[in-house]
Length: 489
Image (cartoon, rainbow, N blue to C red):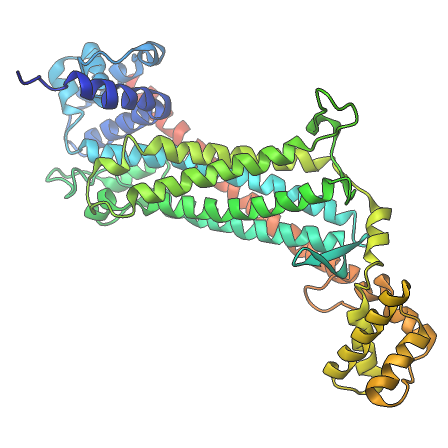
């Protein structure tokens, strides 16, 4: 025998879960949409002032706590229909029914999804700005702190901690700007698009957009319903940032190894061992990496779910998928926020880093450059001379001295160099290596101070952008509330 809709299996596996998710994520957004739509209908003469007042009173009388405690029982299809039932209890059914004039669940859904996602996006931007601030504040303390820079996981050349941290800060700045652009594109209102072709009623989509704090309405109504790039662009930006966060976390994980002994995390972010009394495990960094990887996996799951779905209203991108988007955003924020907290009071083993910046012959690129400048030789020849010097020094278990350099030059050139012992010593000094690299973007303290100033200006600009957007949303919410109060009063 055929079951009536909704069948028990459909209730158990679809509607009950979607109802629980909708209560958690969308109840407030639904309410804002209903208020704004009702006000617009009256302003356009589609409903009367008395009907609007009755609707607003019914909307204000909704018991959200009771709704959140409701279990799905199949007497309504979803949260939308439950709210319709509850609104009808506070006004006459005909008036309650007029609230749904000139709209569809389709345009309601894509609107509430954006209302929710823009808050998550702003929250993540704020956490990313705080992490960048930590990088910049630490960089300001370490313009002269020498470190060994690595390529292919091997000691490569001397640099400074400021140079290293500014690289991360600059990278994170690009992540923030990507999220800002995603927010701007997301913060457009689809309400009024109807099922997919707008409405024959004389609605004002710009007014509803304004009341809900959007920058403007979306344009094409078909695309307003069918397009998913409002969340794929956001998750694309988030994914790019999470790749960066994972790479940064890995660097600090290595630095925290006792063999590197380059960073010490605050006691509140390390754990001991249940059996080994000496352990000081950098667990916060592990959780940053793990949570970030989880968030990235969730974002990739969203892309997999939507990449070949129809360009139109389709369940694949709606109730079942949306919670995965918010989970990815939440975990991304957790990873970024934890990163900032962990590093804020971290300290670096400056002396150990300085020692390693002078080991493993990592300054000899400058020796090769010095030979080029002093002797007017091609770099390829200078490279051979210095390479032979390194091999000889390794064989002798020492450093490159003047005699070793001259012997290498004699073998390759047939004569000695004019470079003095003092000039050789200066050329292989890590301090000299760093200080002479004062070109744009280099590690010289004068250049990292300039770069830090630029990043501070960018951070200030981003803070102003954030405060402006946050204020816009808060002002719109307050304005909507004031309009409702004035009509009811």
